Image (cartoon, rainbow, N blue to C red; front, side, top):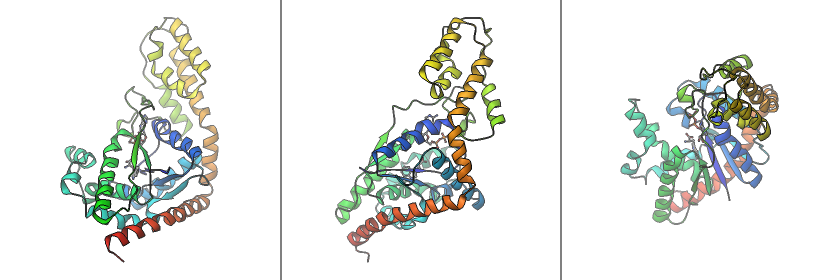
Length: 321
Ligand code: ADP
Ligand code: TRP
């Protein structure tokens, strides 16, 4: 059973990404045969600055390694180090009906927002299909927004197999409904696009300020708060503290006597301590970027060993040399 997922290097990761995507992916390593890649080709539809792409790509690599991605266990690489994926994109794109492509919401949403679409954005689901089909993948864990792209991948694989004979493994998406949506600083879903994030890594002072700045109501500390379980700081504290500790804070808030300032201070401390070991590891990796580069290249070699076989099958089936 092979699992694959891609991470687009577009900015700084937050604790919503951590609990929603990274931690499940890191846990899945125990089950073995995981393929994780940094989707730097995908970033080209929106990022047009070379230095920024390099920086984002390395930043994401550091974040994942620091949080526990083990390159001995998983194959971890940079998408563009295996350029065969672009060849496969052409083969699949040549079988993708325009109607299917036009229904993709990644493209529809962007154009509806008035963002000028380029061909890359339109073709993005075909590149994503190539990402998946190139590695004989069974399972693709993604957020709900990506479900349609995995459906399109299945359509393209089935069509290719039907046209040229059995070539590709048909993948399935794994939508993580069990992962709660992590709320942001304003109580809405935490997302880069809403400016309400708590980053995994960053400057201590700035992050403390963000957390201490969470807006609460004007009830006095002494007042009992029967709705303590709905308090945003309590909800976030539950992610980081033991059940006993978070229940204790929730209870003190409910019966009265705990001030919001003290609650937010506790939240900051637990959040900050949660990532202490990861922060140390990240600094170590950051001081040794040559090593990170070696890790990614080694991953690319292992990914390529699979890719070459699959692209060989696809070439042969379709009558290319
Ligand atoms: P953003 O909304 O910040 O742009 P992405 O869409 O890049 O985040 O999400 C990357 C991954 O992180 C996805 O798998 C998504 O499901 C997960 N994720 C993002 N935000 C949250 C959140 N608030 N709660 C849980 N998971 C999240
Ligand atoms: N499109 C995905 C996202 O924006 C990233 C991605 C690219 C991906 N290729 C993939 C995810 C292949 C799973 C499989 O989050």
